[in-house]
Length: 177
Image 1: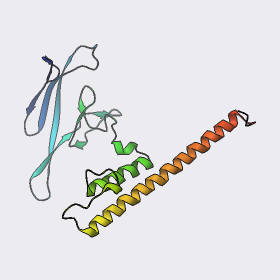
Image 2: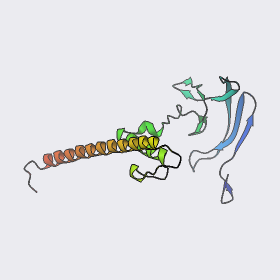
Image 3: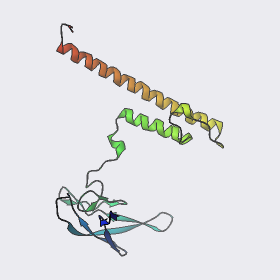
């Protein structure tokens, strides 16, 4: 990969039936020197139920001093080596959501299932070929989820208002301005 005529990334790959060898250079910060890394990733092939097989990487990382060895389909470059998401302590965005954000995401997905260009249930138009019964059910689901989101948001706003009033009351117990 090049940027402005300068090579900024390159990786060499050698593969056989049971392993993949990566050959690349790594630099943690701009001030550090480039380090040459050769990493061998072992592959296992698992038979599929209806024939064929599926390849997986065996994670070469270490967790708590023990080899990880997880069977994974993806490895991440979060440092010097390519490791699984558990070794780099990566989470999915949905794992960091609170209840309100989860409701918002569900409502958005319900709306997009009917019409990807719509932003709320109010903007929905029944797509050509969709049964009216299906459209009504999906629109109702989107409406219900958005109403739950609104209720939860209003409840959270009321909590914050109470907390602010309590804080103001403690600062100024006499109620003077």
